[in-house]
Image (cartoon, rainbow over all chains, first blue to last red; front, side):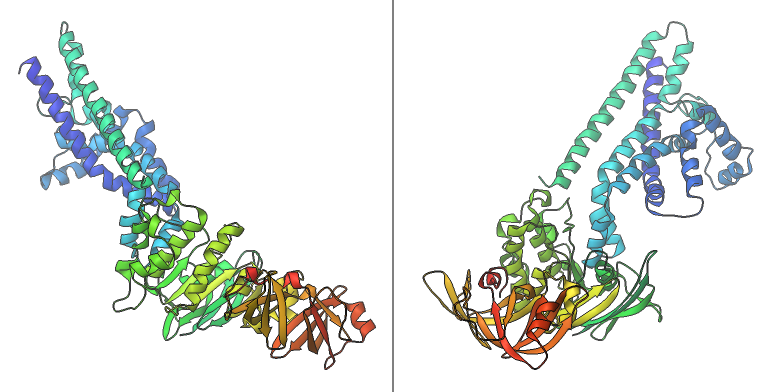
Length: 229
Length: 362
């Protein structure tokens, strides 16, 4: 594979992984954020710590833990592989690593947004006859939409940049599990491949800046609708 | 349709045990801050689950804790107007107004959009965002939003408490229209402002420290000497109805009440309309003889129905003037010196300026 093809393939895989990770993580993160923001239960601080763990653990450790749990010799890994879901050394494992690494950022942004919603507005909606699901869809969701968006962008960016846990869990196989950061790292090991590195660094910058611009635009639109101006 | 309420609820520092009934018209729950008013209205709305008791509206059991019945707020169809409006910030005024329309009971009658918009004067606000509205405008939108969900009853928790004087005056006529209009919606109205209650309520429930201290038709409770300490000695006083007879050029209007005529300044109601007058107990002076040469011309022959000494140096005197009841608050010493007692006839002098119907009327 030519150097260029390697770079484009890494970019494609990174985008693919990041999109899947974001898509899968948003509903789960929203649910956890909701529980943490609104519910009181035994073990709440434990759950909170667990969610935040990937933020404070060295990514290599997180990747290693994933390998222990979902590796091809681990019982759970084998069970999943039996139903056709292979994670270790496969791009779907990169998705899992990206989800876990981005999860604390997503939950945090969404939780802050949920906590900022005045439950009195939801009470008012209920007195107007709205069932719970409608209260969520018509009042809560539009009000926390900017927070969901911010969380999603952060999760996406984290997934694009994830390196340590990913390379530990799914290795660095060009065309299969080599994401953009892994490809950059690989190119850095090759003497005289600086040009290739610069190209991929530019790719990463373009994607990152594009994501931020897109989220800013969407956030402005949402904020405008919420302000009703 | 009668609302039948009995609520028992224990808080960390006090216990609430309140029972009352609210029929047609406006039933006001009056009490000082912390008396438990909001607890009661929230329990009726289903936003608070009391420890014990029941709430029934007509034949419908909204909650009966012992029986394990607790209907969620969304199914109660009670319009709730909160003190702080609680408009949805992400929706326009029009979308706020129609928020509950789709959840209205099938076949329920009630005002349609255009009726409510014109009743509350919202035509120019429809495309606005809630956070550009004044306090009074917000409350009008909140009221319209509650009405358009076609509720069986309206709950109002101090809807005017956050508004200044002129803004209150802006809303009060709408509430009166609602009370007297064709909708005939029963209203439960929580307030700690005697003037609002005196102006709006048909039935009055006085609560203090989590207990009902007096309840009944407004005119009776307001004229009850036992209500004086509950309403506050400066605020206590009877409410009577009067018909506007004429307006003179010097700004004085003549009103007729069952016991005679009153001449009052500042009456803006049209000739022929019936207004409520609030006669503060501390502004009623008693005289054994028909007084002569007074600056006030509002002198009524009255019968003393009861003398009720208070805890302090004051005493509340229950009076009958024609078909109306009045309340006077004078010193216990005056009671003794004048030898006032039940069954005695005397004269009540009403200080003209305080019998001001400008703040009270229909």
